[in-house]
Length: 70
Image (cartoon, rainbow, N blue to C red; front, side, top):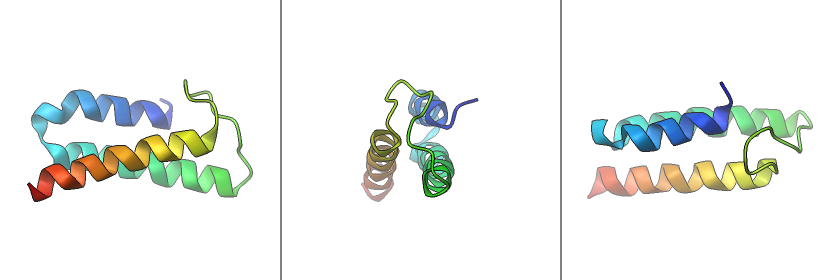
């Protein structure tokens, strides 16, 4: 399963709470961060560029944190 799909699945799982979203987004972000540091610049994800994928996952994580705080 591609790591960016985890975040999309987590968005669908929002009904279970923002903690699930935060966990999936963090897992995907960590995986892509590690892969980017190892030299990956293109992803099989719809967004293609790993920088865009990292930004997408980061925004999802921020939305989850905001939901937890509120």
